[in-house]
Length: 304
Image 1: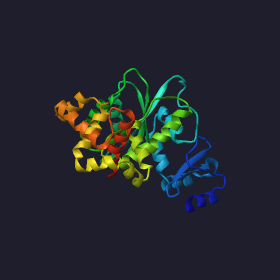
Image 2: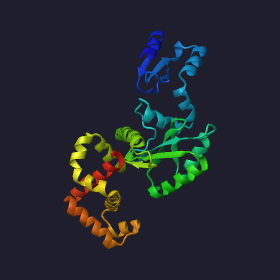
Image 3: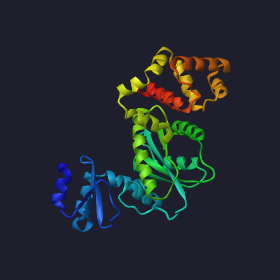
Image 4: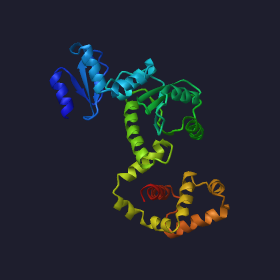
């Protein structure tokens, strides 16, 4: 941490932190090479020094420029800063945080146009905050009508066609505006980062979609292979069977729906499921068995 130490030597009254605070007497700079913030008292900086430091360490100030509304500033400070002041005074309201990332966007990308397009998706008011030019979060208050995942997928395809870039979303869970919301968001950030790395071909992520795979990843691969060996042998011989079993489980073992989606006769589907049970000993009518088989499907799909 050579750079931040040098700054601290020059400004001994500065504060060093992993997140900026809302102390109005300090001006914060993000030192990317050290992955830390330094807050320098405004009284110790000349205008020339301030502008020079903004040029040398522009990231935090660029983010501030992107978050222009009062609501976005308050939510940004609550979620990403060190402050614990709630951004709104609505103790009974529930909120969820939808993280987003934009990739492969053009150099002339306008965040204002993107914000307007996102706002048009929702039937009620939302707050958008940016953490960089192409990353941020949507703050959504719980209403009677909410976008479904299918509607969101449709909207993503339309947006990608309009803006010529790829979009990823992580749909957070609703939570009352307490410290638990901030803690939940921090965990969802971990899951989102994991999902983009391990499940990047998908566009929309949720806790229930990512968490099982996240748990699997934290089990040694050799242990997983041993535990799933019987199931793996069958999937290796018949890759289409994995797709069939996974879809069947995702449909809550609804054979009629699964057969329709796979363009199979229901009896043909049931025959294949029965053969799977016969060969592995895992009866999919059992919830515990279904959980193990579903985890094996995920492991085979993403980590094989």
